[in-house]
Image 1: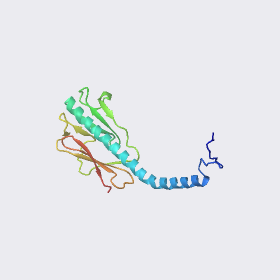
Image 2: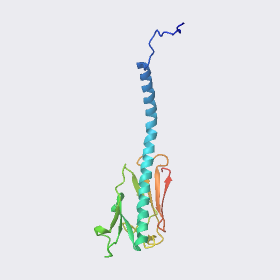
Image 3: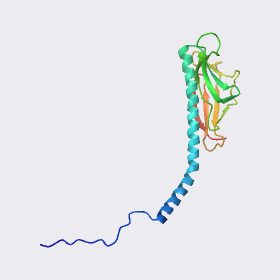
Image 4: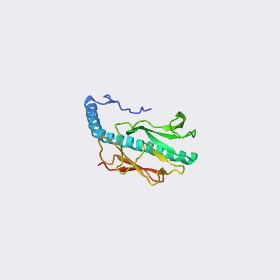
Length: 180
């Protein structure tokens, strides 16, 4: 009977990385991260502005919807009358007492803009009051007005500006603009 011939392994096989290989891998990773982080900051800024613009669109859409459902005037009022970026509230005269100052008149309150975002009113806005009113049909009051706001980052690059427009009909839209 013959015994099959087996091959003997005379050395030990390497199963890990050498220190040099690890150092080269870390150096390559550091270089790739240093190239990718600036563009990631731009992505974060764009996402923040898009979220804030969508929150404003939602707030104005809620005001329009409530005005139509309640068949009454609903207002969007800044928390700070001199700075709309400090937050806004949607209010309605829920108890029909002729004012908009009761605690139950508050329908929604938005938080201030984060990340040093800048909200500026368009020069064509004709704000005679410190609020925007929507009538029982959901249209802006006084009829014929339109409002536009620009939302941008302090260090604006590329298309990091959002234009939020409230049309005469009360419909709200948001679009991207290139930085000035």
